[in-house]
Length: 60
View 1 (spheres, rainbow, N blue to C red):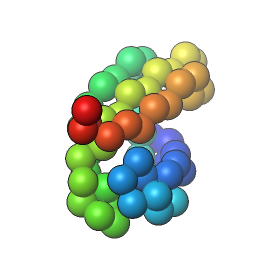
View 2: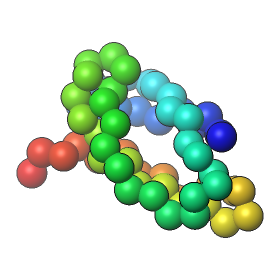
View 3: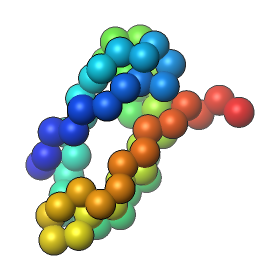
């Protein structure tokens, strides 16, 4: 597990999430710990190193 810090796309607070680096590509929805809005998280790892991280609003 790796902790990753980023800015919430809704409330703009600096928050963190624990990322499971045992799964190479992931896409899921997790609520912001501050504003509780749903964030679409996309991550990819290679050899346990984070290659890409995106945290997007699910609103269109």
